[in-house]
Length: 137
Image 1 (cartoon, rainbow, N blue to C red):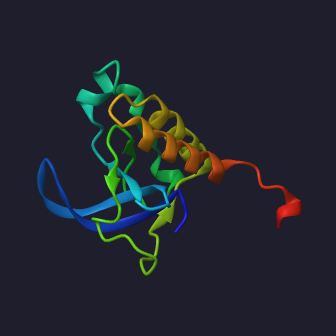
Image 2 (image 1 turned 135 degrees about the vertical axis):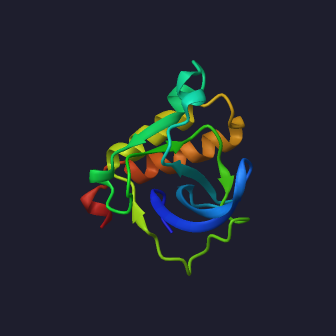
């Protein structure tokens, strides 16, 4: 499991019935953290000065697993452990480098994520998008 991997899993949501949802792994160390992908932009979040920057636009033509242009919601992170994410699941896809960079900025600016969790996720994403040194290969 790598930061930036996208999983399509059945989950229970706070605002509706259980359903399958795309979730992006934003921290691969225990406890796992994921951010949900929404096909309908969160109008309230986008219009909120504090929460607007926590929404990352994902173009369908840059992410083959998506059927529609979508939004990565970095205003709230969920526990991947409680959603059943584990090494036996195959990713449905992967975020582009630009989308991962957007997620890093969105999580970094989120006023709703606890600071320790925020720091862990920002460090995990930064490590994933950092240029790899050929000497390390």
